[in-house]
Image (spheres, rainbow, N blue to C red):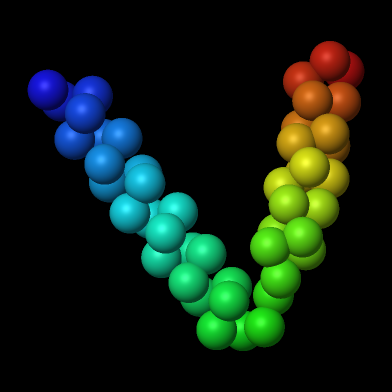
Length: 48
């Protein structure tokens, strides 16, 4: 049950972040690009 609560909280945070991005005029594609770019950067630093 504790894990479910954390997932629900995280989901709500993501929804709020996406709403804020939309209000700021940031497209879904731009958000995807940002996340992919940063995931690649994080993966490289984990290897080094």
